[in-house]
Image (cartoon, rainbow, N blue to C red):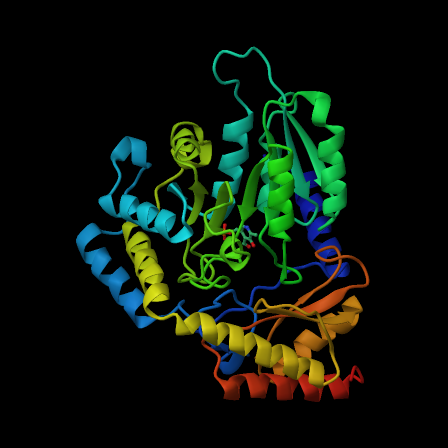
Amino acid sequence: MYSKKLNEDIKKELENLKLAGKFKVERELGGAQEAEVKIENKKVLMFASNNYLGLANNRDIVESAKKALDSYGFGLSSVRFIAGTETVHKTLEKKLAEFLGVEDAILYSTNFMANLGFFASLTNESFGGEETHLDAIYSDELNHASIIDAFKLCKKESVVKRIYKHGDLGILEQMLEEDKEKNYRFKIIVTDGVFSMEGYLADLPKIKEISEKYEALLFVDDAHAIGVLGKTGAGTPEHFNLHGKVDILSGTFGKALGGAVGGYIAGRKDIIELLRQKSRTYLFSNSVPPAVVIASIKALDLLKEKPELLTKVKENSEYFRRGAKKLGFEVLDGIHPIVPVMLGDAAKTQEMSKKLLEKGLYVVGLWFPVVPEGTARLRFQVSAAHTKDQIDRALSILSEVGKEMKII
Ligand SMILES: Cc1ncc(COP(=O)(O)O)c(C=O)c1O
């Protein structure tokens, strides 16, 4: 029953979120996701989406999805092992595995679901008749929420979780050294490939070296890197000359590659097969709609056909980063299209993002507890779809508001 207490407690919680400045407001877009979008009937520059390659409203992708709707209908009304799989699901998995230089891949409805499904499948059960087992997971403290939540689905008695300070590979190695004699069944190191609050890359070469030294499986969530980093857009492994050499990758089609939905795990054939058998978020959650699958295949094809998109997003990011620095802002260094402009103060960040939007620039402000206290920032996300004129306009608005607020 919806009791008076429940009602009051929920109201109080919502009020507290507002008082603490943590209440999230969803801006209504009056159209497609593009370099400029409509908010409240006004055109604004979009610097807050993960539309890194500008494919979210790409005509070829849209046309391929439209055609697929005519041939395959809207959805499959079930999961693949019950109501059947479409050949196109298999085609996308094969293409993706080839693209990433690994043996196999499995599709999930989202990257979140993929991460939730992976860890529990591997760690919860004893394989091959062992009575009990204990596995260890080593995780960067700033890994994505889906990885943190994935651990909650792992049985306490089967898994030891060890969280290391962000990017501190000395501590990671020390943990593995301490655990050498502990006879864990499996050891898994998990890291984001790109950390989305800063746009920083994980030091994959070093993490890979540690994973080999201590015989730990390496899992990289490359959500912000697929379609962005590496010579062909295959992500952080390719960027670091480790293409095909990371044991397990997860990622999404919901950011650079068309921006709809669809996640995956990619890696060794036997692990992927195990996931098809055991992974609950795969087995008991609907298959990705064929139109989305076919459009995602098109996104991978476009990435191959138009390598200039990768060059463009890189050049645009450099141009914007350099420009914001030149204006006198404190900007985090990096190579990723996530460009954080550091303001420090949460109230100032809230005020500034509001003023920027009023002047036609949509960028997201982040503050505690999303980022550490005192490190509030505006997180700009640059796209290959931005023209030089649009970036110049964004910088000009940034400069105007920065001066008005006496930040620069
Ligand atoms: C590192 C990382 N992993 C996973 C996800 C979830 O991706 P999806 O939207 O496909 O569930 C995100 C999205 O924010 C992410 O940044």
